[in-house]
Amino acid sequence: MVLLEAAAVVAVLGLVVYWMIVLLTAANSRPGDQPGAVRGGSWTVTHYEAGDVTRVVVQRVSPRMDDVLDEHVVAEIPVEDPDYDQIFLAAMSAARERRALFQSEDET
Image 1 (tube, rainbow, N blue to C red):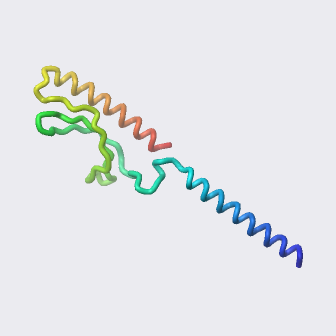
Image 2: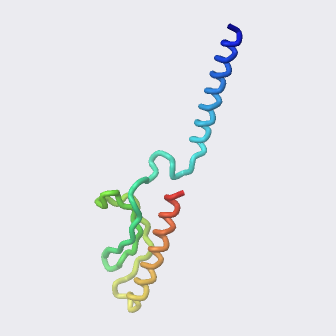
C-alpha cells in the first residue's frame, strides 16, 4: 500500500514538473508566436500608384490572396523622376530580397 502511494506521489510530481515546463516554454516563445501576431498567408512583391508616387511594397496576403495582412513600403518613387525606370527596378529587386528574408523568418 505504501509503495502504491509513493508511486502516486511521484506521478503527481512528474505531472506538475511537466506542466511547469510547458508553461515556461510558452512564456518564452518567440514574438511571432504571440497571440495577435500576423500569421498565415504568404509574402508577395507588388507596386501601386498613390497620388504622384509609385510605392514598391512587400505584402503578406491571406491564403486566398484577397486580403492584405501586413505591408512594408520598400520605396516611394515620384512618377516624374527622370531616373524612374532605374530606381523602380532597383526597388523591385530590394523588395524581392526583403520578401525572401521574410519568408525565411516564417520558416524558422
